[in-house]
View 1 (cartoon, helix red, strand yellow):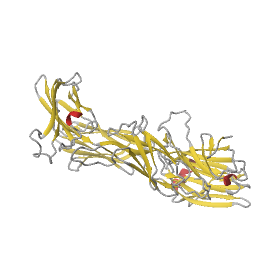
View 2 (cartoon, one colour):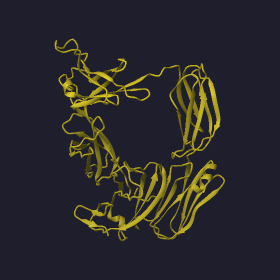
View 3 (cartoon, one colour):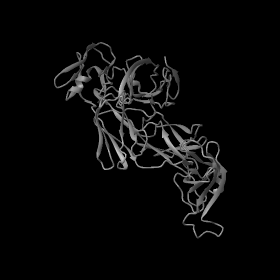
View 4 (tube, helix red, strand yellow):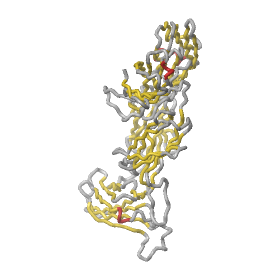
Length: 559
Protein backbone atom coordinates (compact mmCIF):
# COMPACT_ATOMS: atom_id res chain seq x y z
CA UNK A 1 0.00 0.00 0.00
CA UNK A 2 2.12 2.86 -1.27
CA UNK A 3 0.04 5.79 -2.36
CA UNK A 4 -1.86 7.42 0.49
CA UNK A 5 -5.28 7.61 -1.09
CA UNK A 6 -8.13 9.68 0.20
CA UNK A 7 -10.13 6.82 1.61
CA UNK A 8 -10.67 4.74 4.70
CA UNK A 9 -9.24 1.25 4.54
CA UNK A 10 -10.58 -1.82 6.30
CA UNK A 11 -7.79 -3.70 8.00
CA UNK A 12 -8.83 -7.34 7.60
CA UNK A 13 -6.14 -9.72 6.30
CA UNK A 14 -3.01 -8.03 5.00
CA UNK A 15 -0.67 -10.65 6.41
CA UNK A 16 2.46 -11.72 4.57
CA UNK A 17 3.33 -15.46 4.55
CA UNK A 18 5.72 -16.65 7.23
CA UNK A 19 5.55 -13.50 9.30
CA UNK A 20 3.98 -15.13 12.37
CA UNK A 21 6.82 -14.30 14.75
CA UNK A 22 5.01 -14.01 18.05
CA UNK A 23 3.81 -10.57 16.87
CA UNK A 24 2.50 -10.62 13.34
CA UNK A 25 3.78 -7.75 11.20
CA UNK A 26 0.53 -7.24 9.36
CA UNK A 27 0.90 -4.15 7.24
CA UNK A 28 3.58 -1.73 6.14
CA UNK A 29 2.26 1.67 5.15
CA UNK A 30 4.81 3.38 2.93
CA UNK A 31 4.65 7.03 2.00
CA UNK A 32 6.88 9.03 -0.32
CA UNK A 33 6.73 12.73 0.54
CA UNK A 34 6.40 14.83 -2.54
CA UNK A 35 4.71 18.04 -3.52
CA UNK A 36 3.68 16.42 -6.78
CA UNK A 37 1.38 14.04 -4.91
CA UNK A 38 -0.30 16.80 -2.89
CA UNK A 39 -1.83 16.32 0.56
CA UNK A 40 -3.37 12.94 1.33
CA UNK A 41 -4.81 11.10 4.29
CA UNK A 42 -5.35 7.47 5.17
CA UNK A 43 -7.26 5.85 8.03
CA UNK A 44 -6.71 2.18 8.84
CA UNK A 45 -9.01 0.32 11.20
CA UNK A 46 -10.00 -3.31 11.72
CA UNK A 47 -13.06 -4.54 9.87
CA UNK A 48 -14.41 -5.87 13.17
CA UNK A 49 -13.61 -4.41 16.60
CA UNK A 50 -12.91 -7.06 19.30
CA UNK A 51 -15.44 -7.12 22.13
CA UNK A 52 -12.84 -5.84 24.62
CA UNK A 53 -11.79 -2.98 22.34
CA UNK A 54 -8.17 -4.16 22.27
CA UNK A 55 -7.32 -2.65 18.91
CA UNK A 56 -6.62 0.74 17.34
CA UNK A 57 -7.49 2.95 14.40
CA UNK A 58 -4.54 4.73 12.77
CA UNK A 59 -4.65 8.07 10.94
CA UNK A 60 -1.94 9.21 8.53
CA UNK A 61 -1.59 12.67 6.99
CA UNK A 62 1.08 13.47 4.43
CA UNK A 63 2.34 16.40 2.36
CA UNK A 64 0.32 18.99 4.25
CA UNK A 65 1.26 22.50 3.08
CA UNK A 66 -0.98 24.34 5.55
CA UNK A 67 -2.42 24.02 9.03
CA UNK A 68 -5.27 21.52 9.26
CA UNK A 69 -7.99 21.18 11.88
CA UNK A 70 -8.46 17.42 12.43
CA UNK A 71 -11.48 15.93 14.17
CA UNK A 72 -12.16 12.23 14.76
CA UNK A 73 -15.42 11.24 16.43
CA UNK A 74 -17.47 8.14 17.16
CA UNK A 75 -21.08 8.77 16.19
CA UNK A 76 -23.85 6.70 17.79
CA UNK A 77 -27.60 7.15 17.60
CA UNK A 78 -27.49 9.07 20.90
CA UNK A 79 -23.97 10.48 21.40
CA UNK A 80 -20.86 11.80 19.68
CA UNK A 81 -17.59 10.79 21.36
CA UNK A 82 -14.60 12.92 20.38
CA UNK A 83 -11.39 10.96 19.96
CA UNK A 84 -9.21 13.66 18.36
CA UNK A 85 -9.71 17.41 18.07
CA UNK A 86 -6.54 19.37 17.33
CA UNK A 87 -4.74 21.51 14.79
CA UNK A 88 -2.05 19.73 12.75
CA UNK A 89 0.88 21.88 11.66
CA UNK A 90 3.35 19.12 10.70
CA UNK A 91 3.90 18.25 7.05
CA UNK A 92 3.58 14.54 7.89
CA UNK A 93 1.52 13.38 10.85
CA UNK A 94 0.59 9.97 12.25
CA UNK A 95 -1.34 8.70 15.25
CA UNK A 96 -3.16 5.57 16.42
CA UNK A 97 -6.22 5.70 18.68
CA UNK A 98 -7.28 2.95 21.07
CA UNK A 99 -10.93 1.88 21.27
CA UNK A 100 -10.68 0.57 24.83
CA UNK A 101 -11.84 3.80 26.49
CA UNK A 102 -14.92 4.02 24.25
CA UNK A 103 -15.83 0.34 23.94
CA UNK A 104 -18.78 0.66 26.35
CA UNK A 105 -20.36 3.31 24.09
CA UNK A 106 -19.80 1.10 21.05
CA UNK A 107 -21.24 -1.98 22.76
CA UNK A 108 -24.37 -0.15 23.92
CA UNK A 109 -25.20 1.39 20.54
CA UNK A 110 -27.10 -0.25 17.72
CA UNK A 111 -25.05 1.56 15.10
CA UNK A 112 -21.64 3.25 15.38
CA UNK A 113 -19.75 5.26 12.76
CA UNK A 114 -16.25 6.68 12.74
CA UNK A 115 -16.11 10.20 11.31
CA UNK A 116 -12.76 11.71 10.28
CA UNK A 117 -12.83 15.36 9.20
CA UNK A 118 -10.00 17.65 8.15
CA UNK A 119 -10.39 21.35 7.40
CA UNK A 120 -7.72 23.68 6.05
CA UNK A 121 -7.73 26.82 3.92
CA UNK A 122 -7.43 24.91 0.64
CA UNK A 123 -7.53 21.23 1.60
CA UNK A 124 -10.58 19.64 3.22
CA UNK A 125 -11.91 16.11 3.58
CA UNK A 126 -14.54 14.09 5.44
CA UNK A 127 -14.97 10.33 5.54
CA UNK A 128 -17.44 8.25 7.51
CA UNK A 129 -17.09 4.52 8.12
CA UNK A 130 -19.42 2.19 9.98
CA UNK A 131 -17.84 0.20 12.83
CA UNK A 132 -18.82 -3.37 13.59
CA UNK A 133 -18.33 -4.79 17.06
CA UNK A 134 -17.63 -8.50 17.38
CA UNK A 135 -20.23 -9.55 19.92
CA UNK A 136 -19.81 -13.26 19.31
CA UNK A 137 -19.05 -15.49 22.26
CA UNK A 138 -15.30 -16.02 22.26
CA UNK A 139 -14.93 -18.36 25.20
CA UNK A 140 -14.03 -22.01 24.71
CA UNK A 141 -15.20 -24.82 26.99
CA UNK A 142 -13.27 -28.05 27.44
CA UNK A 143 -14.80 -31.07 29.14
CA UNK A 144 -13.08 -34.19 30.48
CA UNK A 145 -13.97 -37.16 32.70
CA UNK A 146 -11.47 -38.82 35.03
CA UNK A 147 -11.80 -42.03 32.98
CA UNK A 148 -13.74 -43.19 29.93
CA UNK A 149 -15.35 -46.31 31.46
CA UNK A 150 -17.23 -46.79 34.74
CA UNK A 151 -18.75 -49.76 36.52
CA UNK A 152 -22.21 -49.57 38.14
CA UNK A 153 -22.09 -47.94 41.55
CA UNK A 154 -18.96 -45.86 40.82
CA UNK A 155 -18.83 -42.06 40.79
CA UNK A 156 -18.29 -40.34 37.45
CA UNK A 157 -16.14 -37.24 37.99
CA UNK A 158 -15.71 -34.59 35.34
CA UNK A 159 -13.99 -31.24 34.96
CA UNK A 160 -15.06 -28.17 32.96
CA UNK A 161 -12.43 -25.67 31.82
CA UNK A 162 -13.61 -22.34 30.38
CA UNK A 163 -11.18 -19.96 28.62
CA UNK A 164 -11.54 -16.81 26.58
CA UNK A 165 -10.03 -16.12 23.16
CA UNK A 166 -6.70 -15.17 24.80
CA UNK A 167 -6.57 -18.53 26.64
CA UNK A 168 -7.16 -16.84 29.96
CA UNK A 169 -9.73 -18.17 32.47
CA UNK A 170 -13.30 -17.15 31.67
CA UNK A 171 -14.90 -16.34 35.01
CA UNK A 172 -18.47 -16.11 33.71
CA UNK A 173 -21.03 -18.53 35.13
CA UNK A 174 -21.94 -21.56 33.05
CA UNK A 175 -25.73 -21.46 32.53
CA UNK A 176 -26.49 -25.18 32.40
CA UNK A 177 -24.77 -28.58 32.78
CA UNK A 178 -26.72 -31.82 32.22
CA UNK A 179 -26.08 -35.58 32.18
CA UNK A 180 -28.19 -37.92 30.02
CA UNK A 181 -28.39 -41.73 30.15
CA UNK A 182 -28.35 -43.94 27.01
CA UNK A 183 -32.14 -43.45 26.68
CA UNK A 184 -31.68 -39.63 26.61
CA UNK A 185 -33.24 -39.22 30.04
CA UNK A 186 -31.82 -36.30 32.00
CA UNK A 187 -30.52 -37.82 35.24
CA UNK A 188 -28.67 -34.76 36.63
CA UNK A 189 -28.36 -31.03 36.05
CA UNK A 190 -26.59 -27.97 37.48
CA UNK A 191 -27.69 -24.36 36.94
CA UNK A 192 -25.44 -21.27 36.86
CA UNK A 193 -22.25 -23.13 37.70
CA UNK A 194 -19.56 -20.88 39.18
CA UNK A 195 -15.99 -21.84 38.31
CA UNK A 196 -12.80 -21.31 40.28
CA UNK A 197 -10.39 -19.51 37.94
CA UNK A 198 -12.27 -20.95 34.98
CA UNK A 199 -12.31 -24.54 36.31
CA UNK A 200 -15.39 -26.36 37.56
CA UNK A 201 -15.33 -29.86 39.12
CA UNK A 202 -18.57 -31.86 39.22
CA UNK A 203 -19.51 -35.51 39.81
CA UNK A 204 -22.47 -37.87 39.68
CA UNK A 205 -22.78 -41.16 41.63
CA UNK A 206 -24.02 -43.99 39.42
CA UNK A 207 -26.76 -46.35 40.57
CA UNK A 208 -25.86 -49.92 41.48
CA UNK A 209 -28.00 -51.18 38.59
CA UNK A 210 -27.96 -48.38 36.02
CA UNK A 211 -28.80 -48.53 32.33
CA UNK A 212 -25.58 -49.68 30.71
CA UNK A 213 -24.25 -47.91 27.66
CA UNK A 214 -23.05 -44.46 26.63
CA UNK A 215 -23.87 -41.46 28.84
CA UNK A 216 -23.57 -37.83 27.64
CA UNK A 217 -22.49 -34.72 29.53
CA UNK A 218 -23.67 -31.48 27.96
CA UNK A 219 -22.32 -28.05 28.96
CA UNK A 220 -24.32 -25.09 27.68
CA UNK A 221 -22.26 -21.91 27.44
CA UNK A 222 -23.51 -18.45 26.57
CA UNK A 223 -23.69 -19.24 22.84
CA UNK A 224 -22.24 -22.72 22.46
CA UNK A 225 -22.77 -26.28 23.64
CA UNK A 226 -19.95 -28.70 24.51
CA UNK A 227 -20.53 -32.45 24.80
CA UNK A 228 -18.54 -35.36 26.19
CA UNK A 229 -19.47 -39.05 26.54
CA UNK A 230 -18.52 -41.85 28.91
CA UNK A 231 -19.54 -45.50 29.12
CA UNK A 232 -21.10 -47.44 31.97
CA UNK A 233 -20.94 -51.25 31.87
CA UNK A 234 -19.97 -54.34 33.82
CA UNK A 235 -16.45 -55.27 32.79
CA UNK A 236 -13.35 -57.14 33.88
CA UNK A 237 -10.06 -55.34 33.55
CA UNK A 238 -7.66 -57.10 31.17
CA UNK A 239 -4.51 -58.42 32.80
CA UNK A 240 -2.23 -57.58 29.89
CA UNK A 241 -1.79 -54.75 27.39
CA UNK A 242 -0.01 -55.95 24.23
CA UNK A 243 0.79 -53.47 21.45
CA UNK A 244 2.62 -53.38 18.13
CA UNK A 245 4.68 -50.30 17.32
CA UNK A 246 4.96 -50.06 13.52
CA UNK A 247 6.28 -47.36 11.17
CA UNK A 248 3.54 -45.34 9.46
CA UNK A 249 4.85 -46.50 6.06
CA UNK A 250 7.81 -48.18 4.40
CA UNK A 251 9.22 -46.66 1.24
CA UNK A 252 10.41 -48.90 -1.59
CA UNK A 253 13.82 -47.24 -1.27
CA UNK A 254 14.19 -48.11 2.42
CA UNK A 255 16.89 -50.63 3.24
CA UNK A 256 15.47 -51.58 6.62
CA UNK A 257 12.77 -50.74 9.12
CA UNK A 258 11.99 -51.65 12.72
CA UNK A 259 8.97 -53.36 14.25
CA UNK A 260 8.42 -53.57 18.01
CA UNK A 261 6.03 -55.46 20.25
CA UNK A 262 5.56 -54.35 23.87
CA UNK A 263 3.53 -55.98 26.66
CA UNK A 264 2.70 -54.81 30.17
CA UNK A 265 0.40 -55.88 32.95
CA UNK A 266 -2.41 -53.37 33.54
CA UNK A 267 -0.69 -52.22 36.74
CA UNK A 268 2.44 -51.30 34.75
CA UNK A 269 4.85 -54.18 35.24
CA UNK A 270 6.51 -55.43 32.00
CA UNK A 271 5.54 -58.91 30.82
CA UNK A 272 8.39 -61.42 30.48
CA UNK A 273 7.97 -64.07 27.80
CA UNK A 274 8.91 -65.43 24.39
CA UNK A 275 7.80 -63.85 21.12
CA UNK A 276 7.17 -65.37 17.70
CA UNK A 277 6.84 -62.69 15.04
CA UNK A 278 6.05 -62.98 11.35
CA UNK A 279 6.02 -60.32 8.64
CA UNK A 280 4.59 -61.09 5.21
CA UNK A 281 3.86 -59.61 1.78
CA UNK A 282 0.84 -61.31 0.33
CA UNK A 283 0.74 -62.15 -3.34
CA UNK A 284 -1.36 -59.76 -5.39
CA UNK A 285 -4.69 -61.30 -6.36
CA UNK A 286 -4.00 -60.73 -10.06
CA UNK A 287 -0.93 -62.91 -9.79
CA UNK A 288 -2.42 -65.62 -7.65
CA UNK A 289 -2.65 -69.02 -9.45
CA UNK A 290 -0.70 -67.61 -12.40
CA UNK A 291 2.66 -67.69 -10.69
CA UNK A 292 5.30 -70.34 -10.97
CA UNK A 293 5.27 -73.33 -8.66
CA UNK A 294 8.00 -71.74 -6.54
CA UNK A 295 5.86 -68.67 -5.75
CA UNK A 296 3.59 -68.95 -2.75
CA UNK A 297 0.53 -66.95 -1.81
CA UNK A 298 2.66 -64.79 0.50
CA UNK A 299 6.30 -63.99 1.05
CA UNK A 300 7.21 -64.11 4.73
CA UNK A 301 10.04 -63.83 7.21
CA UNK A 302 9.73 -65.12 10.79
CA UNK A 303 11.63 -64.34 13.98
CA UNK A 304 11.77 -65.59 17.56
CA UNK A 305 13.00 -63.81 20.66
CA UNK A 306 12.26 -62.78 24.22
CA UNK A 307 11.00 -59.57 25.76
CA UNK A 308 13.55 -57.33 27.46
CA UNK A 309 13.31 -55.76 30.91
CA UNK A 310 10.84 -53.19 29.58
CA UNK A 311 8.57 -55.92 28.18
CA UNK A 312 9.46 -55.18 24.55
CA UNK A 313 10.86 -57.14 21.63
CA UNK A 314 12.26 -55.25 18.62
CA UNK A 315 13.50 -56.48 15.28
CA UNK A 316 15.22 -54.64 12.46
CA UNK A 317 13.72 -55.98 9.23
CA UNK A 318 15.77 -56.30 6.05
CA UNK A 319 13.52 -54.52 3.53
CA UNK A 320 15.57 -55.73 0.54
CA UNK A 321 14.55 -59.33 1.34
CA UNK A 322 10.94 -58.50 0.38
CA UNK A 323 11.71 -57.10 -3.11
CA UNK A 324 9.73 -53.94 -2.48
CA UNK A 325 9.88 -52.79 -6.09
CA UNK A 326 8.30 -56.01 -7.34
CA UNK A 327 4.59 -55.43 -8.16
CA UNK A 328 3.71 -59.13 -7.87
CA UNK A 329 2.84 -58.58 -4.19
CA UNK A 330 0.46 -56.32 -2.35
CA UNK A 331 1.84 -52.93 -1.34
CA UNK A 332 1.62 -53.60 2.39
CA UNK A 333 3.08 -55.80 5.11
CA UNK A 334 1.05 -57.94 7.50
CA UNK A 335 2.76 -58.16 10.90
CA UNK A 336 1.72 -60.72 13.51
CA UNK A 337 3.24 -61.33 16.93
CA UNK A 338 2.44 -64.09 19.44
CA UNK A 339 3.57 -63.56 23.05
CA UNK A 340 3.83 -66.54 25.41
CA UNK A 341 3.99 -65.50 29.07
CA UNK A 342 6.79 -67.26 30.99
CA UNK A 343 4.91 -67.94 34.24
CA UNK A 344 1.59 -69.19 32.83
CA UNK A 345 2.36 -70.10 29.18
CA UNK A 346 -0.68 -68.00 28.31
CA UNK A 347 -0.54 -66.68 24.75
CA UNK A 348 -1.54 -63.25 23.41
CA UNK A 349 -1.75 -62.35 19.73
CA UNK A 350 -1.52 -58.90 18.15
CA UNK A 351 -1.34 -57.93 14.48
CA UNK A 352 -1.09 -54.87 12.26
CA UNK A 353 -0.37 -53.57 8.75
CA UNK A 354 2.34 -51.36 7.26
CA UNK A 355 1.67 -49.68 3.88
CA UNK A 356 4.44 -49.70 1.27
CA UNK A 357 4.83 -46.42 -0.61
CA UNK A 358 6.45 -45.53 -3.92
CA UNK A 359 6.26 -41.84 -3.06
CA UNK A 360 9.83 -40.63 -2.80
CA UNK A 361 9.22 -37.05 -1.75
CA UNK A 362 6.65 -34.29 -1.28
CA UNK A 363 7.31 -30.70 -2.31
CA UNK A 364 5.72 -27.56 -0.92
CA UNK A 365 6.12 -23.83 -1.52
CA UNK A 366 6.74 -22.19 1.85
CA UNK A 367 7.15 -18.56 2.87
CA UNK A 368 6.38 -17.51 -0.70
CA UNK A 369 4.18 -14.46 -1.50
CA UNK A 370 1.01 -14.89 -3.53
CA UNK A 371 1.56 -11.62 -5.39
CA UNK A 372 4.42 -10.08 -7.33
CA UNK A 373 5.47 -6.73 -8.72
CA UNK A 374 6.90 -6.84 -12.25
CA UNK A 375 10.54 -5.77 -12.22
CA UNK A 376 11.11 -6.75 -8.59
CA UNK A 377 12.71 -10.09 -7.80
CA UNK A 378 10.22 -12.72 -6.65
CA UNK A 379 11.68 -14.71 -3.75
CA UNK A 380 10.56 -17.87 -2.00
CA UNK A 381 11.57 -21.37 -1.08
CA UNK A 382 10.54 -24.95 -1.72
CA UNK A 383 10.54 -27.48 1.10
CA UNK A 384 11.21 -31.14 0.21
CA UNK A 385 10.37 -33.93 2.67
CA UNK A 386 10.21 -37.71 2.54
CA UNK A 387 7.26 -39.88 3.51
CA UNK A 388 8.24 -39.68 7.19
CA UNK A 389 8.15 -35.85 7.00
CA UNK A 390 11.93 -35.63 7.36
CA UNK A 391 13.70 -33.02 5.18
CA UNK A 392 15.52 -34.31 2.09
CA UNK A 393 18.93 -32.71 1.66
CA UNK A 394 21.04 -32.67 -1.50
CA UNK A 395 18.27 -33.29 -4.03
CA UNK A 396 17.80 -31.06 -7.07
CA UNK A 397 14.57 -29.08 -7.41
CA UNK A 398 13.41 -27.76 -10.79
CA UNK A 399 11.60 -24.40 -10.61
CA UNK A 400 9.48 -23.48 -13.64
CA UNK A 401 6.85 -20.86 -14.39
CA UNK A 402 4.07 -20.67 -16.94
CA UNK A 403 4.47 -18.78 -20.20
CA UNK A 404 8.18 -19.49 -20.48
CA UNK A 405 10.59 -22.34 -21.08
CA UNK A 406 12.92 -20.90 -18.45
CA UNK A 407 13.72 -23.08 -15.46
CA UNK A 408 16.19 -23.23 -12.59
CA UNK A 409 17.71 -26.27 -10.91
CA UNK A 410 18.45 -25.67 -7.24
CA UNK A 411 19.80 -28.08 -4.59
CA UNK A 412 18.18 -28.42 -1.18
CA UNK A 413 20.16 -27.61 1.96
CA UNK A 414 20.39 -29.70 5.13
CA UNK A 415 16.90 -28.49 6.08
CA UNK A 416 15.41 -29.74 2.80
CA UNK A 417 14.89 -26.17 1.54
CA UNK A 418 15.72 -24.74 -1.89
CA UNK A 419 15.68 -20.93 -2.09
CA UNK A 420 14.87 -19.20 -5.36
CA UNK A 421 14.79 -15.67 -6.75
CA UNK A 422 13.04 -15.12 -10.09
CA UNK A 423 13.25 -12.21 -12.52
CA UNK A 424 9.72 -10.88 -13.06
CA UNK A 425 10.50 -8.31 -15.78
CA UNK A 426 8.90 -10.44 -18.54
CA UNK A 427 5.84 -11.57 -16.57
CA UNK A 428 3.75 -8.76 -18.14
CA UNK A 429 1.43 -8.31 -15.15
CA UNK A 430 -0.23 -11.68 -15.78
CA UNK A 431 -1.09 -14.51 -13.39
CA UNK A 432 1.89 -16.85 -13.25
CA UNK A 433 1.86 -20.49 -12.14
CA UNK A 434 5.04 -21.70 -10.49
CA UNK A 435 5.85 -25.40 -10.30
CA UNK A 436 8.50 -27.28 -8.36
CA UNK A 437 9.52 -30.87 -9.05
CA UNK A 438 12.46 -33.16 -8.44
CA UNK A 439 14.98 -33.63 -11.22
CA UNK A 440 14.75 -36.96 -13.12
CA UNK A 441 11.83 -38.22 -10.97
CA UNK A 442 8.26 -38.80 -12.34
CA UNK A 443 5.70 -36.35 -10.98
CA UNK A 444 2.80 -38.79 -10.64
CA UNK A 445 2.40 -42.40 -9.60
CA UNK A 446 3.41 -44.74 -12.41
CA UNK A 447 1.95 -48.19 -13.05
CA UNK A 448 4.09 -50.99 -14.44
CA UNK A 449 3.82 -54.75 -14.47
CA UNK A 450 7.60 -55.00 -14.14
CA UNK A 451 8.61 -52.65 -11.34
CA UNK A 452 7.11 -50.22 -8.83
CA UNK A 453 8.23 -46.81 -10.13
CA UNK A 454 9.20 -44.05 -7.72
CA UNK A 455 7.56 -40.65 -8.02
CA UNK A 456 7.60 -37.25 -6.27
CA UNK A 457 4.61 -34.97 -6.05
CA UNK A 458 4.80 -31.63 -7.85
CA UNK A 459 4.09 -28.42 -5.96
CA UNK A 460 2.27 -25.58 -7.72
CA UNK A 461 1.56 -21.98 -6.77
CA UNK A 462 -0.28 -19.30 -8.73
CA UNK A 463 0.87 -15.73 -8.12
CA UNK A 464 -0.90 -12.62 -9.31
CA UNK A 465 0.36 -9.11 -10.09
CA UNK A 466 -0.21 -6.23 -7.71
CA UNK A 467 -1.52 -2.97 -9.11
CA UNK A 468 -0.34 0.35 -7.72
CA UNK A 469 -1.55 3.64 -9.13
CA UNK A 470 1.68 5.31 -8.02
CA UNK A 471 3.76 2.61 -9.77
CA UNK A 472 5.35 1.96 -6.38
CA UNK A 473 5.38 -1.27 -4.43
CA UNK A 474 6.40 -2.65 -1.06
CA UNK A 475 7.02 -6.24 0.03
CA UNK A 476 7.96 -7.81 3.35
CA UNK A 477 10.56 -10.53 2.88
CA UNK A 478 9.93 -13.92 4.46
CA UNK A 479 11.39 -14.38 7.92
CA UNK A 480 14.19 -16.88 8.34
CA UNK A 481 12.76 -18.19 11.60
CA UNK A 482 9.33 -18.99 13.05
CA UNK A 483 10.25 -18.07 16.63
CA UNK A 484 12.12 -15.25 18.31
CA UNK A 485 13.21 -14.85 21.91
CA UNK A 486 11.72 -12.24 24.19
CA UNK A 487 13.73 -9.04 24.77
CA UNK A 488 15.85 -9.68 21.67
CA UNK A 489 15.91 -7.38 18.63
CA UNK A 490 14.27 -8.91 15.59
CA UNK A 491 14.89 -7.59 12.08
CA UNK A 492 12.76 -7.90 8.99
CA UNK A 493 13.71 -6.97 5.44
CA UNK A 494 11.52 -4.93 3.14
CA UNK A 495 11.78 -4.41 -0.63
CA UNK A 496 10.16 -1.47 -2.36
CA UNK A 497 10.14 0.21 -5.78
CA UNK A 498 9.73 3.90 -6.62
CA UNK A 499 10.26 6.25 -9.56
CA UNK A 500 12.28 9.53 -9.66
CA UNK A 501 9.10 11.58 -9.83
CA UNK A 502 8.27 10.50 -6.30
CA UNK A 503 11.01 12.69 -4.82
CA UNK A 504 10.75 15.75 -7.04
CA UNK A 505 11.21 18.93 -5.05
CA UNK A 506 12.37 17.12 -1.90
CA UNK A 507 15.85 16.17 -0.65
CA UNK A 508 15.38 12.43 -1.12
CA UNK A 509 13.35 11.82 2.01
CA UNK A 510 11.36 8.64 2.57
CA UNK A 511 8.80 8.58 5.38
CA UNK A 512 7.30 5.21 6.27
CA UNK A 513 5.01 3.71 8.87
CA UNK A 514 4.36 0.17 9.95
CA UNK A 515 1.78 -1.46 12.15
CA UNK A 516 2.25 -4.44 14.44
CA UNK A 517 -0.69 -6.69 15.11
CA UNK A 518 -1.42 -9.90 16.99
CA UNK A 519 -4.09 -11.70 15.01
CA UNK A 520 -6.66 -9.10 13.89
CA UNK A 521 -5.71 -6.58 16.57
CA UNK A 522 -3.47 -3.55 15.91
CA UNK A 523 -1.21 -3.25 18.97
CA UNK A 524 1.44 -0.67 18.07
CA UNK A 525 2.76 1.58 15.35
CA UNK A 526 6.12 3.07 14.42
CA UNK A 527 7.09 5.93 12.12
CA UNK A 528 10.54 6.51 10.67
CA UNK A 529 12.41 8.47 8.03
CA UNK A 530 15.77 8.27 6.28
CA UNK A 531 17.53 9.91 3.34
CA UNK A 532 19.01 8.31 0.24
CA UNK A 533 21.20 9.56 -2.60
CA UNK A 534 19.14 9.76 -5.77
CA UNK A 535 20.87 9.64 -9.23
CA UNK A 536 18.64 11.79 -11.47
CA UNK A 537 19.59 9.84 -14.60
CA UNK A 538 18.20 6.57 -13.31
CA UNK A 539 14.62 5.62 -14.08
CA UNK A 540 13.75 3.01 -11.48
CA UNK A 541 15.32 1.40 -8.44
CA UNK A 542 14.59 -1.27 -5.93
CA UNK A 543 15.68 -0.84 -2.35
CA UNK A 544 16.15 -3.38 0.44
CA UNK A 545 16.23 -1.95 3.94
CA UNK A 546 19.43 -3.85 4.74
CA UNK A 547 21.15 -0.60 3.81
CA UNK A 548 21.82 -0.48 0.08
CA UNK A 549 20.28 1.30 -2.88
CA UNK A 550 20.72 -0.85 -6.00
CA UNK A 551 20.35 -0.33 -9.70
CA UNK A 552 21.92 -2.08 -12.66
CA UNK A 553 25.14 -0.08 -12.56
CA UNK A 554 25.93 1.02 -9.05
CA UNK A 555 25.55 0.39 -5.34
CA UNK A 556 25.36 3.40 -3.04
CA UNK A 557 25.38 3.30 0.73
CA UNK A 558 22.50 5.02 2.49
CA UNK A 559 23.35 8.38 4.05
